[in-house]
Length: 144
Image (cartoon, rainbow, N blue to C red; front, side, top):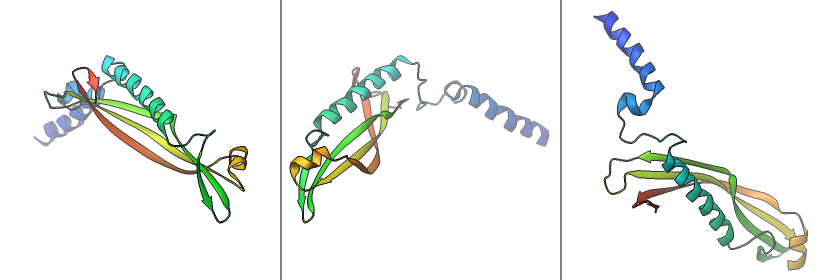
């Protein structure tokens, strides 16, 4: 009996590694990157990062200005498009059978100067970076 049990424990994990969706019938499995919903969500996530970068309060050319005792600090944020990761998972919900998870790095840059004009001519330095995770659901072929 112990031999049989040992063989089952060794064989089952190997089968699950080959294709976790098929081996377990996992209703919340991650979809493969070549699945059409994965590429659909990837396009959505790319356009969302572009939209975020357009709508941040400050930009490199027109930063937010903060007057301090030592002069002026220019600040702006940017979502790093090259850090974008996307995953699509099946859910157990009939109303929204898939969720998409996007992760990216948001970076804050600052520059110091004596006056507002000098801030943009000085180099901006990366002062903070944070990981952002956003979760969307697929409802009637639209990510919400």
